[in-house]
Image (cartoon, rainbow, N blue to C red; front, side):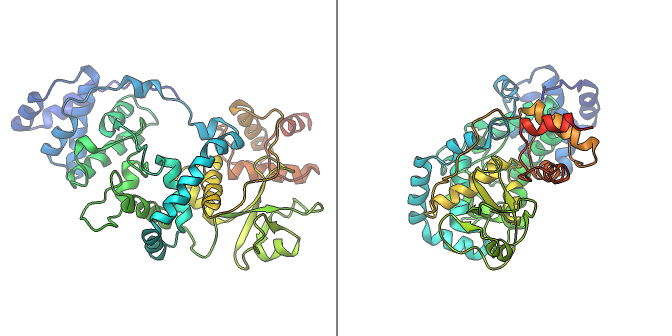
Length: 402
């Protein structure tokens, strides 16, 4: 998306009129911010005050803050949405990351066991999130969070989302969980080793090491437990895996892609690692590269992972990395090598399926569960192999049907 400049001078004037003379004096004592950005910041004060943020915290948070041109320059689609699943997996599930994850599993076995007992999320899953988000805490980000969020909020990027996140960041500073100079993360405002946005922090961060602070910046136990807390709130079910990498029999009916694990077992589906499939729970078949490529039975916990990041590629990377950290095998089936649909192609497919009343999601050019379900419904209707894969040939087939 392109950032849109906000005409905030009138809002700032109203906000300044509402301030006491003492507060205004504090404001003028701060290093001046430029033009519209200064007006935008001053316009935030009533909302911040409504969240019980003190003027002292507000002024300290914005002291010396100016717009960050590097943040605006990076307004583009995230890699997990812009690349094929298999390319994203190559980087996310590297041999080095697998090795480091296994080393951390041994090093932090006691803490991971305690976190799993509290929240029901297995240690390898937590390590996979931690590895992908911040390279096990080594790359938590260096961009000042308040500056990044203020830049995006003033530009109007994604409506009021970043304004709300900025106000949440001020709440965190008010609670003294982190000093302003330590509140750092990514260019888009995701913070610390967990890469939580401030609202996620307020909702899910926990103090697991018992030092009185919810420290996702410098405490690995707090970071790992906070990820577990987030997933538990998102509906993680402790009795289910995230999914299982499987091999399908040659005669498998792709149109019957959802059901109990026991039913998949009866139909000849086998786990790649040789272990039996779970005896309880429901799953659905996920073929991210189409029929003939890697196959997975995914559960409700796959959707819990997607609540952290809505990309299918991201959720699959977390799941597969967790399997590899736990000693599971690499994927053996080949990924497709032919052309694939880009964002415009996926949008066209969404539009075409919506015209047939098969798709009711956003026309955003992103693959996900809604599009996957719509593709399958179309494939079944058209007598095609129902693999749920949004391919160029499928789009051409759709366009060619009356």
